[in-house]
Image (cartoon, rainbow, N blue to C red; front, side, top):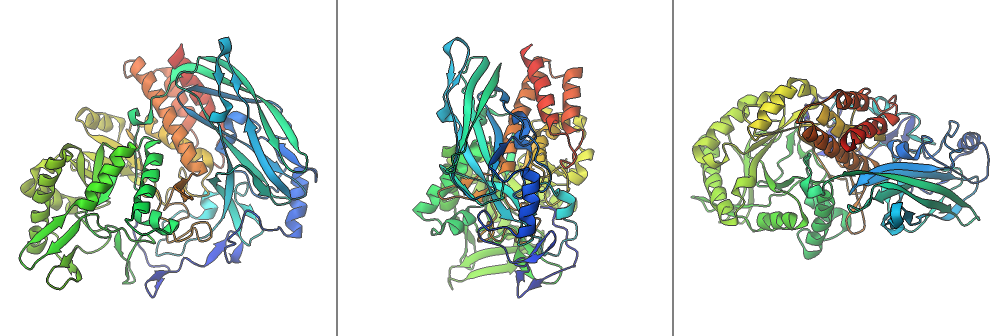
Length: 620
């Protein structure tokens, strides 16, 4: 995704030099247990000063429970901790949504068995929201690692993060991002530990104020109780399958198997795929992204090395075979992948990557049935051999999709191919398989507007996609979203991006009258993203979640993106109520939510203020 190479640093023996970790202020080997390591004396003193005590304390990041999830808590706070004086917790919500918030705890001694609980919430007329429906997770810290690549366009750590979110003792510096599940957690002395709450508001909840208690305990006798109130408005977010927001993040099944230690395409692997699919479906993911060739993201790097831009290459879900005179295709794995995703609630759209190589010369990959060998054959775009191969595949693909009933929802998908190249493909598709004329999906520049019926414009060309153009495309049944990658520095969803930025992205889509958001990778991990979080690109560019025991481990940015999508749904309802027009209240709300794209300086209450204005207009 927007990987424009310029030679600055390199591949050695075909492997990216990403294993060397350079923290913000020094070089070190990543600590594999950054959540429990001891701190140095100078850092201990600084944290003690920030705490103002050596006793156990709890606090509300930002001082307001409502905005507390929109920041990252530094593992080792060195500035005076705010929010220690907050004694009451308050949230606002609508029905059928999730609301995240966090508390933090730290002590001058080791803490064990730290846990939090939420009691039942009592509401109007005897209504109740069960406390058991609230999830409590623990923010997990990961080492901060600079990438080593051929890219000089990518945002740097210093451009993205703030000193208040990335912290440590340089061996290494760390950032809180992953959300670890469990009944309790141990916390080292002089280390902050955020407790992450996800409140689920039932669709049937009566409007009104609900009251309850949040309690935090630890083995040293700590027992802190906070009174909690949740104001539920008379509005409802639709189920994820009915979201208007068009979310398209690209999952990679191979790394699910690798990071869980299971055999690729085994029964256990398919169960893992189902778990990740269910997670995607809970966000309203609209596209089942598939591969129809081996390694669609193969890269011809400027120093002459051909290697995938993902640590584990994608494999083809379609088996290509050549018997010396003709091509044939086995779609069985592709079918299973699509069926599994549909069953889990993904779709209905299906993306097929890709007729064009990414940042590489065109080539075919297939099994020679005479020799049994796998072959990679260079071809010329539009040349006789290219036309022979794709002229055989496309009609066969159409016939197969018709038998499955999936043709009307399947797109030929392309990643950042230039307009002249895409024009060759579009003309050929019209000739060989005109059923796909109106089902071409492109992530790239706004210059491909006339080619793509599903277009995601890059951040650097987003201004070319005016609200008027987006509306014209929508009226024609076309989809228009936008994406970010290693740039811009702000807003983004990198591992150390200010948390509020992920929440803000759907607001940007709403403000620009776009349909949604795309992110090039959901889970393209290294072999261990908890100790070596970077393969090539800026940390977190390659994944939004982490590998968990039996499925995904969520992250702060993945949860914040979900809640921004819920905000988008409320905006969509308000627009429908107002006949598709933006009144002054909505215009002001959109301006407030997006008025500062740099989360380091943004007032984190902006989103809550803007959302409250939307809910007020919607329920008035």
